[in-house]
Image (tube, rainbow, N blue to C red; front, side, top):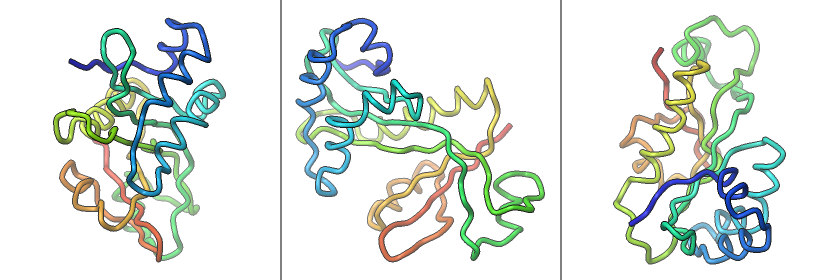
Length: 177
């Protein structure tokens, strides 16, 4: 069985950085040269404490296993010059005269190798977490950057391609008011 707990809550419950770091170090993810693994092991606590993002962890009742995690935050999305004013308007529901707009960002998401989380639970929970925040404070959309081979995975919950370069794809999910 698994449960979702924020890293901020975990820090306050366990109240010991070494125990938390040891727990996070059990997370293994071979995908993408372990970029998500590196974030959880080395940066998640610092980012959470500084308020740059919130990390949510799927764990068991005694906090001895990390099945997966995601991190969400807020950023100012800089629209590429190639993005039309019409697309900007569709996303923000307002005329955008500058090249940026505030948004929620799905900064990191990862499932531990070999864990048995139900398929799609990480992404669905991340989107629902942001939607709950959106209900309280507003906002227009969620953005993320991903590798091209993951576009279909994110499209299944409503993300659409916004911009693509040689390395990754920027995708957005419009939030309704």
